Length: 485
Image 1 (cartoon, helix red, strand yellow):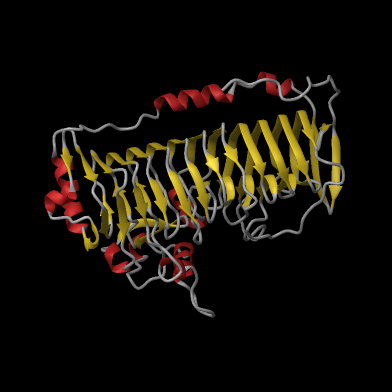
Image 2 (cartoon, rainbow, N blue to C red):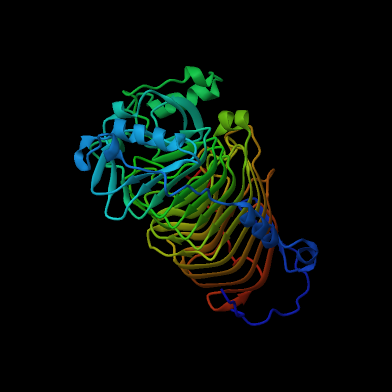
């Protein structure tokens, strides 16, 4: 991609030191390049990370189908046993093998991938999942919104495997709707629902093997979840109607998610959520979701601190974000921290996309978010702020753990329409630090920025509503704390 200067050359201006006081909250920003000139180029590190993320490959000669083991692609017959046998045969083949779905609609329950196996869903074929919770047991070790437990299997699950893939041009259909999985969002009025009980058990320090939830529980499964796996590829498929999070690698290394199309608008229907993962590439995907398009996570509260594994070395490139809560989000299950995230060459555009770049943390999570870099992102419109960093999410200040935010660069970001450019809310004892906005153009921003407890907010060659700006908009305001969303 060739870049030409988007804005007039920046003028030589003296360093600004300005204090903005609003409702007792303070911010400072400057207009200096001296610090930036001494730092290494973060995108050189991103290039190095990308070179070591390599997807697995599989012998094409070792080809198996569910039909070889009694499967029937009629959309009615349960193919669970046939698929399991095909996967076992492929795993035992020299160098591994491919399980190919072709010729119709394959109905199934839980699928468990083994090492050296590629699931390939052929064009015009569908892998459709049962809505019967019993079809996703016996229980497996999994996570629900950042908390470990023993319970419902994700639709496609792997644990401790290496060299696994889900590929093809076909469809993965979760069959979720308001009459099945989506109805399990909450517990009954006045009762502690299963998700709340799970979180309570984790906060009380109950061992994971005692956090057991059976088929009667109302905890929804993820769609795809490789857990503690290496060398993972998810490529080309279309994902529809998920119970909740669609692609959820947990504690994995060397993960490629490429050219995937996701369209699912149920509750908590995040598109791709790497959690406590290292070396992840999410590239050329399309997200049209009921929650965050991409949400990078690392465990929730006590459980996240117990496991203590950050997500790091994450690259998001060439993706399209349509509907969703956030285009690229870090949080809110972020207690293990996130570092070294790179977002580039993406397009985000929908009146039903709340925020383009969003960070969610609070004093219950307490995670450290560091070294995040965004460049060459075009945002047609978003409903709220273009960039949100919010410590007042959820429980807000009601917790004993200090969140950390240090290091965000926005470079060559173009925004057509937004409510406001920045919504930055730190704590007085834990300010947001080192945010740089350079070579950016925000064409139409309706409201003043929110800037609360920020240190080191730097502007270089930035335009807002057609005018060059050197800092947050005059009259920037502070919104009330403890917002949810």
